[in-house]
Length: 248
Image (cartoon, rainbow, N blue to C red; front, side, top):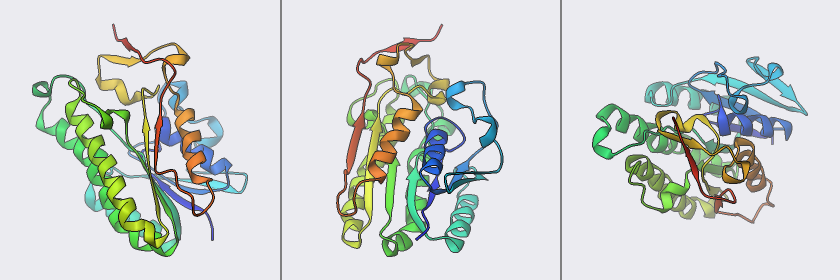
């Protein structure tokens, strides 16, 4: 069976690095992103040869699909169209958004966007693909966060969405494992991506105190490449030191 994968949040950061790494590993990657306009960050920028709508390397390829996953109708159409024409072996729910600060300082639109991006969209995509993933003995990887494991007083709504995603991963694994479907929950700690663009802090400059998007991408590849019949269902990834940097 051809190695076909759908990944969300693929326009930058962890999603972009994972899409490129999977292409290098021979996967056909259907990379979903709200926009593929490059930003100025080296970590989040597509290299020149990968800015085309379709990129190929080592027998793998990336096909970019522009889609706002909070638009449920658009999301359903995209997933159904890809799944109709290709046997999907792997789904990676990576897209995420975060707003930080005291809870009363948020607004309904920000809370709704986090819930719809971080929790609702993964549940909808799994709902649309699960029947065929069972037939294909496929795999689902949900990129959650270490905030799912602890209280987060300056991001409690974000933490709640990630706790919900982790809980969903565990329940879905118990439901689907008897059909040969693996469900893996990956929880990265502080990672140098643009997730913190709406926060008053960011990743520390010290590489010992932050993860890179490539670190998480390699963790995904580690999970994907385990032998059939063996599943690492939960993976927590942390830097050596725990600290953040305040924005000025």
